[in-house]
Amino acid sequence: MFAWEGQAVPAIDAMMRERDPRRYRLGLMTTTGDGDSAVMIWFAGRSELGQYLARVEPRRRGLEGLEYTRLRDALQDRVADLEMRGTTAELREALNQHTLPVFRIHWWGTLESLRQGGDPWSRSMLRALTPPADPPLPARRTVELLDALAELAPRSGS
Image 1: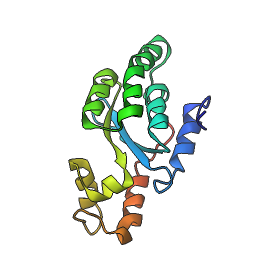
Image 2: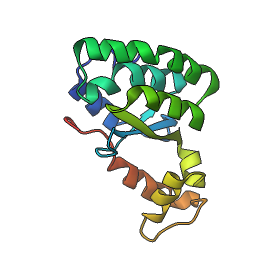
Image 3: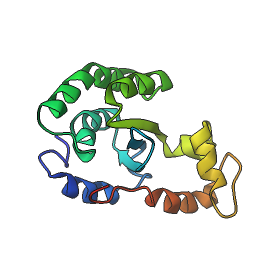
């Protein structure tokens, strides 16, 4: 059982906002289907991330009732793939085929993969730091990255 289970979305948002990526090692950034309203959340592992994607993120994005149930159920096979295979680009795209237009997974990975700048979004995050950083981000600048990521933490009603 996850700490957020059975909680209302605002309470879940408050809980997730407090998570430190150095302890909760797997990150997820979602946006609305049109690419707006980005939210970054950190998880203990793939199982928690998958269950959150199927059971909470649709509610965060306003889905309710039968539409929510249909999407949650449609995601179950992909959540099982996530638990077994991890956060691959192919799986992210497969999940996005189910979740659009409600939301999309923009990025997922570890803080270390983000520091390494192995994908376009990670590199853009590093370039947005002041002063901009080239990958890999030196360990001494990790706090700066964490501050930038905190701006993407969920807010109630986001």
